[in-house]
Image (cartoon, rainbow, N blue to C red; front, side, top):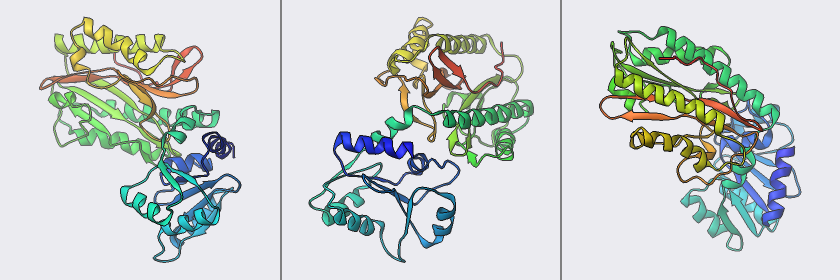
Length: 356
């Protein structure tokens, strides 16, 4: 298990003895098992033994059948995970343990039970490892992207005056499930008219009208891996203002594809677009970063934003999503999931953009 060995290397380098994972995406990553959900379970990694999954009796048979190269320990009825982990820590005389997530209440329990053990929440350790994808991960993300392309195409074909936003969303979501996804990467966004200026507008009962700008944002989760795709369409003839904004966003995304390279920092990538928006007097309406890493989580490092010092690495997957949002009027966002290669960005999502 190369991923577990990579974590153990970090354990030795940073001089800690135990890593505890409670997040589904991290357990999927470490077990190299993206088709199995681990929500509500806990994985414990020690330096000199197999990882241990703690589960209830309810999930025992499923985990034993679906997950390889781990020990499975079943919690007794009413037994708390904090008690079982504390026993293991004391048994192995662990002096320093890190967690990928830790509530304040859990911290208090562990601090009381393990007064001689240093306890810290360090989610960045696995996030850094997950940032660079391997070939298998890229193939899964290509599949998720292809499904998003099909879902978007279907939604755009259905879109017309008189239908409701949630009806358009339902068309896209049906395709995502029918093509073999475990679910959605996030709530589908179909935001029309004044609602297109809401970056996370979701989908409502609002009826789509002639002259509306419509922002459609869809994402598929395929075997644990996510895709993210946004298109903006105008119903009927767009106004001169709508055309101007759309053409600026369209052009800036294409420029970003050409200029973003490995080893660039996140703020530099964001600045490529933001500087051009300043020249068009529209920077104040670009109210989010240019993009973000995506993989087992929809939002993960690296960040492409004004203050991000994240280094863009080859074989990372990021979104590129310039957007302009004019409150009370309309918004435009165009987004693709892209792979950072030696030569720059390669789009994984390929749904055709409308050229106005």
